Length: 112
Image (cartoon, rainbow, N blue to C red; front, side, top):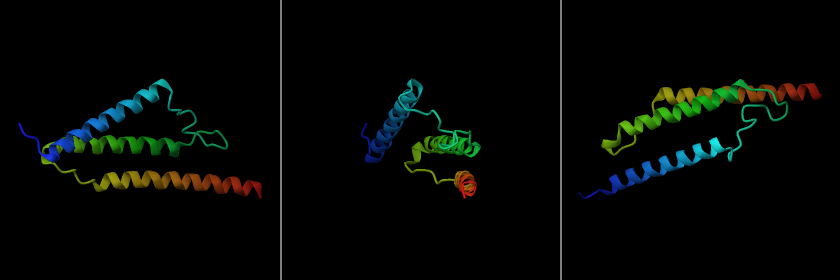
């Protein structure tokens, strides 16, 4: 069986992504990657819901697109990114930046 360059590239990419995901997952579980305070404001230490939303939407979007890529393995092309996925992740980022800007301006107004 002769493999085409596209098959080799596809397989190599799949192995790389799988190993990288496993390594990151292992480091998260063992505490090598510090996630403490990831969802909190650095200055006040309070929980920020928009950070949580950003993390969930980004991970969910990545998993969804990865499932689309797995479904299209035989076509030897990456699937197009759905508009709804772009809108969801873009909206999540916009909400995060809006919350961050609001909190920063509120903090600055109390210091003046």
